[in-house]
Length: 153
Image (cartoon, rainbow, N blue to C red; front, side, top):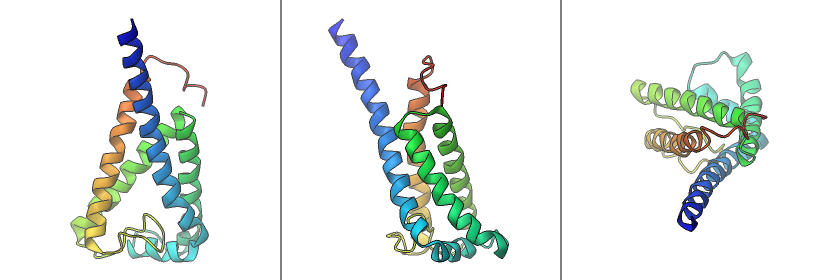
Protein backbone atom coordinates (compact mmCIF):
# COMPACT_ATOMS: atom_id res chain seq x y z
CA UNK A 1 0.00 0.00 0.00
CA UNK A 2 2.89 2.35 0.77
CA UNK A 3 4.30 1.80 -2.73
CA UNK A 4 0.94 2.75 -4.25
CA UNK A 5 0.81 5.95 -2.17
CA UNK A 6 4.35 6.85 -3.22
CA UNK A 7 3.45 6.36 -6.88
CA UNK A 8 0.29 8.46 -6.50
CA UNK A 9 2.28 11.18 -4.79
CA UNK A 10 4.92 11.10 -7.53
CA UNK A 11 2.26 11.33 -10.24
CA UNK A 12 0.54 14.21 -8.43
CA UNK A 13 3.78 16.17 -8.07
CA UNK A 14 4.73 15.53 -11.69
CA UNK A 15 1.41 17.11 -12.70
CA UNK A 16 1.84 20.08 -10.36
CA UNK A 17 5.43 20.79 -11.33
CA UNK A 18 4.61 20.56 -15.04
CA UNK A 19 1.72 23.01 -14.71
CA UNK A 20 3.77 25.34 -12.51
CA UNK A 21 6.64 25.40 -15.00
CA UNK A 22 4.30 26.25 -17.88
CA UNK A 23 2.62 28.86 -15.69
CA UNK A 24 5.99 30.43 -14.91
CA UNK A 25 6.94 30.48 -18.60
CA UNK A 26 3.62 32.14 -19.50
CA UNK A 27 4.08 34.76 -16.77
CA UNK A 28 7.67 35.41 -17.83
CA UNK A 29 6.45 35.86 -21.40
CA UNK A 30 3.41 38.00 -20.60
CA UNK A 31 4.71 40.56 -18.13
CA UNK A 32 7.34 42.23 -20.36
CA UNK A 33 4.86 42.37 -23.25
CA UNK A 34 2.20 43.91 -21.04
CA UNK A 35 4.55 46.73 -20.04
CA UNK A 36 5.65 47.40 -23.63
CA UNK A 37 2.51 47.02 -25.74
CA UNK A 38 3.68 49.33 -28.54
CA UNK A 39 6.91 47.38 -29.02
CA UNK A 40 5.00 44.10 -28.83
CA UNK A 41 2.52 45.43 -31.41
CA UNK A 42 5.50 46.12 -33.72
CA UNK A 43 6.65 42.52 -33.24
CA UNK A 44 3.15 41.25 -34.06
CA UNK A 45 3.16 43.47 -37.14
CA UNK A 46 6.28 41.69 -38.42
CA UNK A 47 4.15 38.56 -38.94
CA UNK A 48 1.98 40.60 -41.36
CA UNK A 49 -1.21 38.77 -40.43
CA UNK A 50 -3.28 41.45 -38.71
CA UNK A 51 -4.55 44.80 -39.93
CA UNK A 52 -2.97 47.80 -38.22
CA UNK A 53 -6.13 48.55 -36.24
CA UNK A 54 -5.85 45.19 -34.43
CA UNK A 55 -2.15 45.32 -33.57
CA UNK A 56 -2.32 47.30 -30.33
CA UNK A 57 -5.48 45.59 -29.00
CA UNK A 58 -3.86 42.21 -29.67
CA UNK A 59 -0.64 43.37 -28.00
CA UNK A 60 -2.65 44.21 -24.88
CA UNK A 61 -5.13 41.31 -24.83
CA UNK A 62 -2.64 38.51 -25.55
CA UNK A 63 -0.43 39.10 -22.47
CA UNK A 64 -3.52 39.48 -20.27
CA UNK A 65 -4.80 36.16 -21.61
CA UNK A 66 -1.42 34.55 -20.94
CA UNK A 67 -1.49 35.82 -17.34
CA UNK A 68 -5.03 34.53 -16.80
CA UNK A 69 -4.10 31.13 -18.23
CA UNK A 70 -0.98 31.01 -16.04
CA UNK A 71 -3.02 31.71 -12.91
CA UNK A 72 -5.56 29.08 -13.91
CA UNK A 73 -2.79 26.52 -14.41
CA UNK A 74 -1.53 27.19 -10.89
CA UNK A 75 -4.99 26.28 -9.58
CA UNK A 76 -5.47 23.33 -11.95
CA UNK A 77 -8.39 24.94 -13.74
CA UNK A 78 -9.56 22.71 -16.59
CA UNK A 79 -10.56 25.68 -18.75
CA UNK A 80 -7.08 27.15 -18.32
CA UNK A 81 -5.46 23.89 -19.36
CA UNK A 82 -7.67 23.72 -22.44
CA UNK A 83 -7.04 27.41 -23.19
CA UNK A 84 -3.30 26.92 -22.82
CA UNK A 85 -3.33 23.98 -25.23
CA UNK A 86 -5.37 26.03 -27.72
CA UNK A 87 -3.05 29.04 -27.53
CA UNK A 88 0.05 26.83 -27.78
CA UNK A 89 -1.40 25.12 -30.87
CA UNK A 90 -2.07 28.56 -32.35
CA UNK A 91 1.52 29.63 -31.60
CA UNK A 92 2.84 26.37 -33.09
CA UNK A 93 0.83 26.95 -36.27
CA UNK A 94 1.96 30.59 -36.48
CA UNK A 95 5.61 29.75 -35.91
CA UNK A 96 5.49 26.84 -38.37
CA UNK A 97 3.92 29.07 -41.01
CA UNK A 98 6.50 31.79 -40.38
CA UNK A 99 9.37 29.31 -40.69
CA UNK A 100 7.81 27.89 -43.86
CA UNK A 101 7.60 31.42 -45.31
CA UNK A 102 11.23 31.97 -44.39
CA UNK A 103 10.50 34.99 -42.20
CA UNK A 104 13.57 36.32 -40.46
CA UNK A 105 11.87 37.90 -37.45
CA UNK A 106 11.87 37.85 -33.68
CA UNK A 107 9.20 35.50 -32.33
CA UNK A 108 8.25 38.10 -29.72
CA UNK A 109 7.53 35.43 -27.16
CA UNK A 110 9.15 37.23 -24.24
CA UNK A 111 8.59 40.82 -25.22
CA UNK A 112 10.98 43.43 -26.58
CA UNK A 113 13.99 42.05 -24.70
CA UNK A 114 13.37 38.54 -26.01
CA UNK A 115 16.49 36.41 -25.54
CA UNK A 116 15.57 34.62 -28.77
CA UNK A 117 16.14 37.76 -30.83
CA UNK A 118 18.63 35.85 -32.97
CA UNK A 119 16.07 36.03 -35.74
CA UNK A 120 15.23 32.92 -37.71
CA UNK A 121 16.77 30.52 -35.19
CA UNK A 122 14.54 32.12 -32.55
CA UNK A 123 11.45 30.95 -34.42
CA UNK A 124 12.72 27.39 -34.46
CA UNK A 125 13.63 27.44 -30.76
CA UNK A 126 10.22 28.92 -29.92
CA UNK A 127 8.49 26.24 -32.00
CA UNK A 128 10.33 23.44 -30.20
CA UNK A 129 9.66 25.04 -26.81
CA UNK A 130 5.93 25.34 -27.53
CA UNK A 131 5.73 21.72 -28.65
CA UNK A 132 7.58 20.59 -25.52
CA UNK A 133 5.22 22.67 -23.34
CA UNK A 134 2.31 20.61 -24.66
CA UNK A 135 3.73 17.46 -23.05
CA UNK A 136 3.06 18.35 -19.38
CA UNK A 137 -0.43 19.47 -20.35
CA UNK A 138 -1.14 16.17 -22.09
CA UNK A 139 0.14 14.42 -18.97
CA UNK A 140 -2.09 16.60 -16.79
CA UNK A 141 -5.16 15.69 -18.84
CA UNK A 142 -4.20 12.02 -18.51
CA UNK A 143 -3.58 12.32 -14.76
CA UNK A 144 -6.93 14.00 -14.14
CA UNK A 145 -8.94 11.83 -16.54
CA UNK A 146 -11.11 10.36 -13.77
CA UNK A 147 -11.04 13.30 -11.42
CA UNK A 148 -13.80 15.85 -11.37
CA UNK A 149 -11.98 18.34 -9.16
CA UNK A 150 -10.97 20.48 -12.14
CA UNK A 151 -14.44 20.67 -13.65
CA UNK A 152 -15.54 23.58 -11.46
CA UNK A 153 -13.18 26.10 -13.10
